[in-house]
Image 1: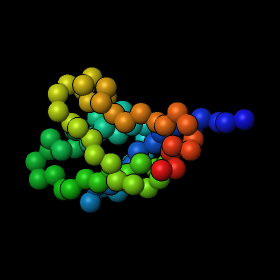
Image 2: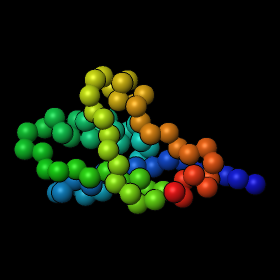
Image 3: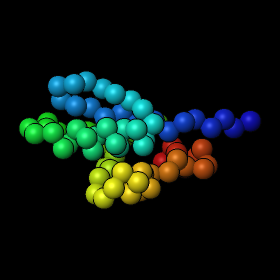
Image 4: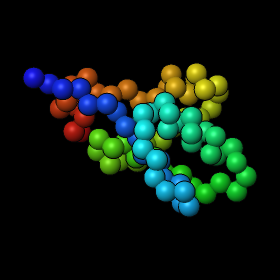
Length: 80
């Protein structure tokens, strides 16, 4: 039986620590964070493989969420 694991991203703010969560929640939190003055670099990791990811934060919140990477439908693809 194959169990679906929820996709989780973890952003790292240089001074504020780590805040894992669902991709849409993380993307919108990062959007708000980069709009603050003197924002430190933010790195976002895919918790499934530890790789850094890029988020396209242009447009409306709806646009941002629509462009988020989708989880692999095949568990073997997630390991690539």
